Amino acid sequence: MNISMYGKFRFSCHKGVACFTKCCRNVNIFLTPYDILRMKKKLGISSEEFLEKYTRTLIGNGASLPVVLFRMREDGDKACQFLTEEGCSIYEDRPWSCRLYPLDKDTTEEDEFKLIVGEDFCFGQKEPKEWILEDWLEDQGFITYDNMNSMFGEITGVESSWKDKVPDKSVIDMFYMTCYNIDKFRKFVFESKFLDLFEVDPTTADRMKADDQELLKFGFKWLKFGLLGERTLVLKKDAAEKKK
Image (cartoon, rainbow, N blue to C red; front, top):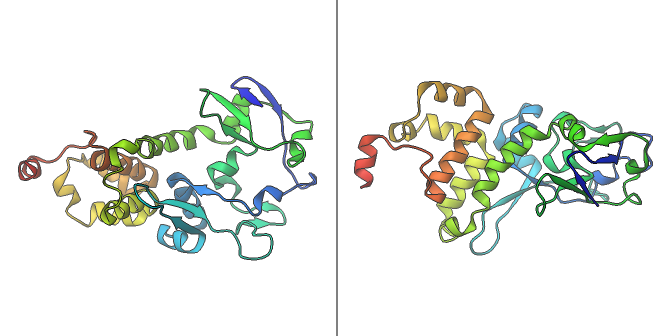
């Protein structure tokens, strides 16, 4: 079932729903760079610590970029590590896929969404609460996540531009650091010769030092420059001459 931007659907999730937290168990949750940024900040830990404790990385054979999955508990029902009797302990900063549930974007139709589970699994769809899709997306904080994920998709979705470079471990490491280990990427930018090579105005640099989201946006520009060959960054004159 598809739902347009001004379409309506019924959904509410709370402890009184019989299937409460069922969707938080034994599932594969792929994390976006912005998911990790939000979650590690909520927990008050470094991105390195978050990646080690809460994720596992998959790298396919051949020309493929690494993807990061959330690490579920190892007990019987493989529940989310942030699941409590009251629900999600990081609810305001939960990942993209959890945020959109029980919907997902329809990649074939612009501005349309689809229900990914039926009422027999998600009893929340039988609740009386009715949403207009546009209002629900605003309530879920969709716009910020969608904007950040779209920037990420502009890189991962252009396979023809990077597929010949991916088997190079240095390229994989660069991609992984920039997208998923934001604290390590900050050190790379500010504690290496990076700023001696690229034109970055002081105001932008100050924002990047203080704001993970601004740094991640810059990281996407750098990956476009390095992986896709786009003119998203400008080399300083001396560096450009050396490159020639």
